[in-house]
Length: 129
Image (cartoon, rainbow, N blue to C red):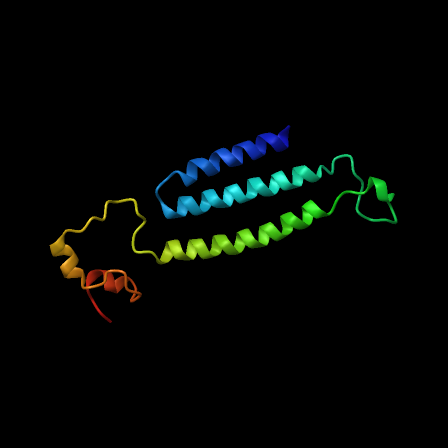
C-alpha cells in the first residue's frame, strides 16, 4: 500500500511540474516521473516474500528475481544522464519561456539577422565579442 501511495504521489507531482511553463520545472517533473517508473518496476518484482539472490542461502524457487533490479539500475543511470543534459540546456538558454517574448519588426532588426546564434548571451543584446 505504501508503494502504491508513493508512486501515486510521485506521478501527481510529476504531472503538476510538467504542466508548468518553466524549463527547470519540466526537467524536475520528468525526473519525478522517472523515479515513479523505477518504483513501479521494483514493485513488479515484489521481493517481499522472496529470499536473497544467493544460491548458497536460498533455494532456487524462493529467490528474488534480479531482472527488475537490473532494469531499475540501468534506468537510474540513464535518468541521471538525461537530467544532467536537460538541466545544462535549461541553464544555457536565453530565457525561461515564462514571459511573452514576441518581437516586433523594429526589435528584431536591432537584434540582428539571426537571433538564434550560438554566440552566447552577448548575442542577445547585439554585442559581438
